Image (cartoon, rainbow, N blue to C red):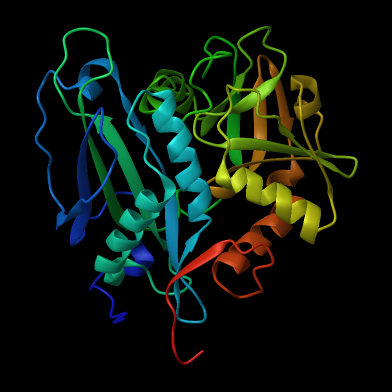
Length: 347
């Protein structure tokens, strides 16, 4: 496979979409199974103004990445787990289930056809966005009859302008991200639009993101608008348990395994109470976009707490280094997480 790169200033990459060569597209009726599909030129999509996704938010997406490794391979990271989450999310949103084989094949086709847009080793990654939505028109609230599945890609750099620095977060007490028995554990498009207003208000006050509490009594920490949360105290790493309103993050699960199996740290997936977080030695968040981002400051009402002396804490740093090294094939992948798209024959 030719790994010749596109003429892009890789060092200047941010986290905005860049038009690439192609995208994958498939269509499916509600009573059918997903099959076929093809690569089409990257471009705009025509939709009815009455489309189910536009009127009732019937849509699901995923986010994963491809990397150019030190061994000159292009790899996907834990793609099977994204595929399984897409299966669950589509079923929850009454969209024809996208099975894992179809999902992974579509992703691989798209990455291969846009291989020149994968940034060189150490200079970024290719963000992969599979998305499916209700295409057919509807004026009543119901699952529509036709659906479109697309996979598009874009080279990206750091999620944060100017590189990673400790985040300044606000504990949100007026709004909730998700409610029990809702769709908080599905990667549904509406989950993210619900967080836009609190996030916008927080950013106007100088915060990077907000931390949401549980919708029952507001005592337990759940997650950020687009990332999972970890706290470290007295030798124990904790992250909120998957209660049904928290997304089962791929990076979250990866950090749990790295901390437990590589670093030898005790890891608990459990209730994390607000007071625990505010008194922690380290706080950090995880996600496909941010990878691992340290938290330097949290404001709760009139209380301001600082962590790790305004830098990345030792546990977050070790987890990030191990995760990055596995993705780049700088160290052995003990978990079998990497899917190699092109095996360099010289290695």
